[in-house]
Image 1 (cartoon, helix red, strand yellow):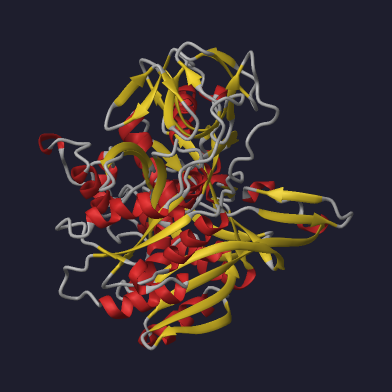
Image 2 (cartoon, rainbow, N blue to C red):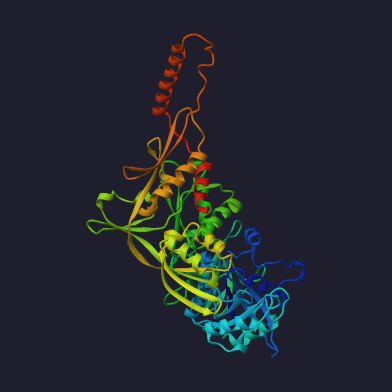
Length: 598
């Protein structure tokens, strides 16, 4: 055990984690030159296309230190985007140390601080690494001062490196041995292993990734999952290199995988404890906290016959992404589907994309919203996940919405425009702190619902990409919220309902009505598109009817002939409108959501 080191790589998005991980793999010759690709640990096409890490990835390396000993490194590369912070928290729970990577040209960003606090909360040893020092725009002294202010370390503790050229990689590998402690644990104690991730293989079933805290696991042992109570045989155990490498035995402190032949995804829970059936541990490991979804949206199959396939796809996806939460629901307009909880809008977008690519499931997503709490006049507490859950307004005492503490780090010249954006989103400035002469940290309290759609994109555009953003939930506060219904010829379309703040209802309603007018095909009858709050109509657009020229055959004669034909047509249109129903095409549901991107 003294020769094992478990550590993860944490940083803000785009600070070079994956590139630096590639150099570590090369230096330790874990991957041959022939098999080496950029972002070697990112195994999804989607990750490579977008240049972001979505899943954390574990890999084992072997390093020969200058003291002549060979050390086993278990490295976990983590995502940097705020929407995937749950992946980071799970990786941190399986480690003793962390490489904190900071870009030498961008410096400490909001997500850097957020991930650092997560690591410190788990008592991890932090090794600061200043990356991209070979770039012309690198400001090594200034950025080193920022790291010293943040960590309280000495300048000599900071490792200067470049993921592109491989500079300083040997220093990082040496620092891991010298500074990160070996794992503690008793190999003779009853088995206690934490599941920190899992994947689904269509041939072999569920593969669980674990970190052994105490005890030893051998091939063909009978194991038990403490929380779910399931008992299985460990058909294959091994360590994670670029491919899975089977082993006969894994001891305390090690990271590995186990295949038990489980085909049901709900049998394996991330955060569960693995122990032996015949010699169980006394209690399960207190893993990481449960995931708290921030954004909710309905996901429906385009064809209702695909409902069961969509359920299977979501089950398998949840194995690979433990932060996805879902439950069945139905809608008048869209049929049967699922109410899903996501960590943010990027997470929602990635899940949609993965359903399409990996499972061939084309889906419709309803208007995303957050979870509210309503109190009735009898003080009953109701959780409102969809606008349709909201009871009759006359029985409600108050509705509370979730508030967040948003932390924005930016350059001083963008403070004005960022404050305007935050105030527009009902934000309250609580703190302004100059980290250095050219970097300022702004702290706002604002409703979560206001940042769900386009806040991050607009923040990036007004600050030319220089502002970084992170947030944490703080509490629920009473708010003047109203349910906005969209009606087509008087009939409400439940999939387009949303809960909005009273002051924004009119402008949001007008936007949706205008958008629907562009998207809905014209019918043989007039269509009224209305936005309503309760019985009050606050916005309206009209799509005129398609009309045949019934007077074309009248080439002369009395005007009354033409009038008679037009009156007959008018009656027909009126009758058609009473019995006709407006079909909203699938494309319209997808396009209406995009109005928030503008």
